[in-house]
Length: 98
Image 1 (cartoon, rainbow, N blue to C red):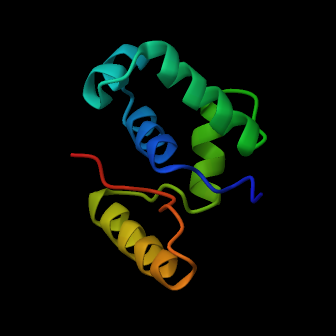
Image 2: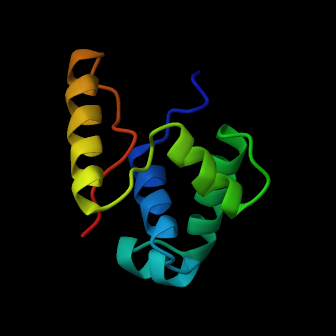
Image 3: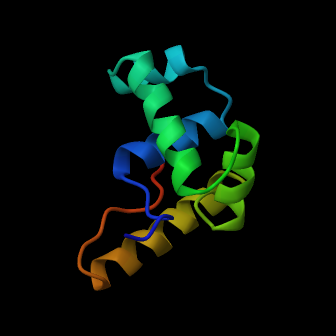
């Protein structure tokens, strides 16, 4: 398993973390418990081999899982979605959060 592949839900959580939402706010937006948000955060930290949330965000930028600015996020998402269509329909690495 590729450890840098994030599930769709992990990707949603990652973007909300990057926009400084708390676990409770993320849970409310995604209709999940704050414990589940914490579990997703910990799983992503393990997958990306980082120690904390700051490391998670830094590594996500390094790997192209997050982009700078709203327009670049859209470009990143479209690039990843089109790449995934050609590679066995894998879950996208990042998604746009409204």
